[in-house]
Every structure is written in C-alpha cells, then in structure tokens.
Image (cartoon, rainbow, N blue to C red):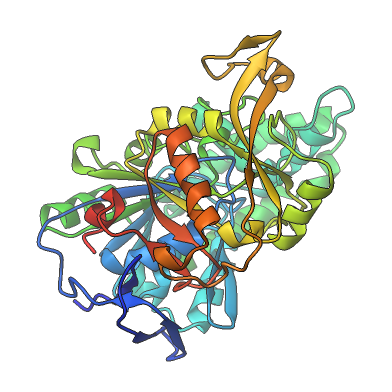
Length: 475
C-alpha cells in the first residue's frame, strides 16, 4: 500500500504528492520514510482537547493516509470538519475526513446519529470529488436516525422564554439521543426493514404529535409524508449499511490500522464537559469504544488536538475569553466562524488548566497544536495558567457551569514573535519566540507537542522528530 510522505520537523528532501484529482500539493521540507505498510499495528484516537473546532478535519485528513480505516464514533451533522487541498475547501459533517484518500475506508460508527437526507447530500458532494462511495463508506446498522420532529422539538426547546438557550445547531441531534437513551429510538437496521420501521415510526410519531400539540406546533408536522420519504432514502443508503463493529474488529485482527475520529471536543462531552452547555454524546476518548464496538485494549494511542489559543461556540462559561480587541483580532485572523452554521466563535487565550483536565480525562499521549500562525501579529500573548475562586487556587475543574463562570483566570504574558509562521514546515524555521511559546504550553499542560499546524493545507504542518506522535503514527 502506498503511503505518502509527511512533513517533518527536520529534513531537506522536497517531495511532490498528488491528491485524488491530480492537483499537486507540496511541502518545502519533507522526509521520505516508512513508505510501505507499517511493520507494527497502532490504532489511535484523534479528538479535540478544547470546545471543538480545533482543526481535527485537517489532521485526520493528513494522517489518515497512514491508516486503512477511519471511524467516526459520535455526534451528528452538527459538527463540521473542514479540509483544504490546494484551492479546494470542503466541509464534512458525517463522513470521516479520511475519505479523500482512495485506499482508506471510512466508517460511520454506531455512536453517530444520522439524518438520512444530510448523509445523502454529503455522499453526493464527495462523489462529485471522485470518491467511490460504495467502496469506501460504511454505515453502522446500529446508528440511530434523526427525523424532522427531532429538529422541531429542539427548536421549540431552545426558543422557550423560561430557559437559558444551550446554543445548539437545532438539527435534532439532542432529541435523537434522548430517544436513544429512552429506548424508543429507531436505528438504521430498523429503517431498512419496512414493516418494522412503520411500526416503530408509528409509536414514536404518536409521542411526538402529543408533544408538538402541547407547544401548539402540531400543524408543523407532516408525519405520513416524512415516513414515505424515509422509505425512499433507506433504499439509497442500504448498500452502505453493515455491522461496522464486526468490520472494524475483523480488520484489526487482520493487521489493519484504524484511526478513530471524534467530533466536537472534550469540553462538550456530555459527562465531562461544561454541562449543560455540552453536546449530547461522549466526545471524549472513551466514546471511541462504545461508539464503534472496538475494545479499549485494541487502541494504542490517544492524540489530542488543540488550537494555539481557544474558542467556543454557543453559551456556557469560558474562563479565558477575551471580548476586547485581541479577541476580535484572533477571530478575524483565524476566520473563527462556524463551518456548519457560520456563527462567530467566542475567542480567548490558551487555557492550560482546561488542557490539563482534558489530558487527564482522555490520557493524551501527545498534542497537536493548530493555527499557530493566527498569533503572528500579536505583540504580547497571554496564557491562562491557573484559576482562582474566592481568592483561592482551584485544584480541580469545577463541576457546575455556575462555579466555572465565577473563576478568575490567572495569566502569564509572553512576548509575541511578530513575524510570519504561515506555511512553515520545519521546527527550526519557526521564530525562537514561537518555539518558546510552544515549550511554555508543554510545561504548563504536561503533554508533549508532537505536531504544529501553520496553515489550513495538508503540508503546512510540522511533525517533531523523536516525538511520541511520530512513533504512534509510525512515520
């Protein structure tokens, strides 16, 4: 199996690779090593270390070339992973980012909730890019299905005057997970059996009709028309559906490598995030096992992805948020607007105690820091190194959003580098102050930084030689 070269922190060979359509992309400092199939098997989880939007799409797209499978394990089409190859930029909401590599098979695991129309729209998009969907894409027969009434209920809930809005995308993700946990949901396997589907849909639709009428929204539901549409969509999706847990476990037994892709970020995990301002699924590393049916003993490494600063979308506490000129500069320089919704993201300074917490919950082996170049023009950089509450140091992440909203961030200020880093592909070519900044983050988080992203394209990346990341990816 061909494995394309990747950028290294040191190395002088210039390589030219080609994407699926034959458009060239290049890196100024690439080193060719380990081209054949790796001699040792390593299955890894790649997930967000903050509140999502950390740049996981680029990272999965870049490194998935080293794997045989990429499996998404939670979330729905509320999470967008942006991938840029040359002049082409696209957003994947359900299909894992590794799909742009022809030899990689991508899996939508059982922990994902699927809107069939959203999936079909995305399939059409990637097919236009040359993806062989029948060959590359597999969908779990245990995924739960999102229906139009899920979206309606979420919109009603978010717009109630007597509650604080969570800031959801109103795409029906949460209500679908509610039905899953309430043991009344409809799974992909049910959708593919017309008789079973009609029976289960009838029960669920009756419940939703009562709920919609209670909020005076009954007229907005056309349950019979929706049922017929889902029958039609089921036949289009049917060829992709299988027992993906068996598919993945058989592949691992045969010596294939699997990358597990998380959506959102750890601080949006339903258990470990800033509840209730979270998503409805297990975004942390543990979700990779329950969301795919692969045992934890078959996973060999956990890779966190973090921005060189921090952002979040929607409501909820944000200790290191900067609502002044620097926060505005970061938003504009980093194009910090939602890839799915277009909503402006709240921006702030790197939060080391938050990263220490997510490293504890996930057990990060290594960290990838993205968007370093966004900080290029800032003369001073603040890093949150601790929290104080009522004048006392905070030793553990507060469990309630009320307490977290009250903490005072403790900052240390570092000098900026004020020279461009965009497109840098060698560690030694980074400005000394940029390297000092990254070393400071390593010191304050306790996690090595194995890779730095300096731009949106695949090759605008530095992999540090001798890092745990290099060993995990067998580069």
